[in-house]
Image: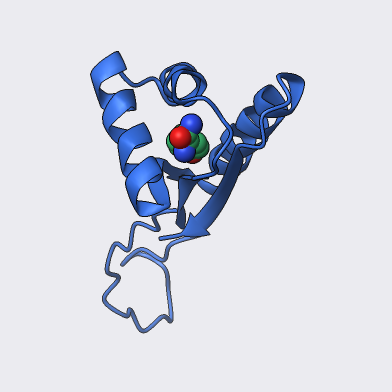
Length: 103
Ligand code: TYC
């Protein structure tokens, strides 16, 4: 518990408030030659709450540059989103790959 000036026999160190932010993780999609563009756009809209326009921009970035960030989240949320994307792609037999990376 934090010491107060009324505690006896204590030398008080100045206490600086240090709010600890959780480490953040990027969720990235990777390009491949087989997953349909439309499926990628719908996946980004659905799991990353992006508009059609935003999702299309992200898909095109992945398609032309090899990878692109869909969102940045605390680790547990990033892992859940990655697994949701991988499971959704697996169900439709697309080879879409999704990874997370610490920021
Ligand atoms: N390159 C794919 C195609 O031409 C489209 C694609 C985009 C695939 C993004 C994966 O993460 C991806 N059909």
